[in-house]
Image 1 (cartoon, rainbow, N blue to C red):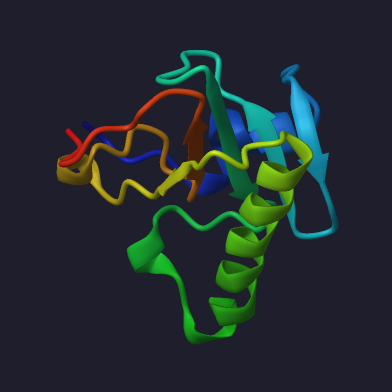
Image 2: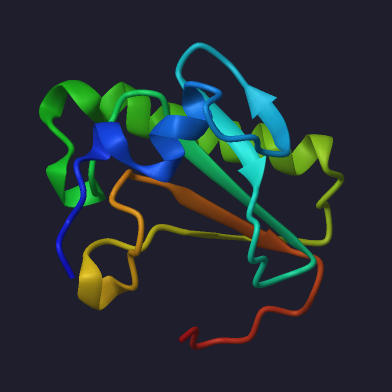
Length: 118
């Protein structure tokens, strides 16, 4: 699989509003929207507006942004009333299950999420 430029992914097109999405959260740094192929009753993707292909590509100057993404997940979970629990997943690289090469966090909830995953 050839890695796509993070500035030209489906997620970048959603950020630019070139592709519609069911957006549930937005601030200056990130966007949260419902996954079109949900793996749980609640499946929301949280993406940075800055195009970072994968977690392993993050730079020292991205530390605050990475923390902000996790904070955004917690805010979305509150808004979505996910008090019974949720899982946050970041797939990194092809062997890690990443299919869109724009960093994204999966927020999964609404069913018992077994362990180990995958």
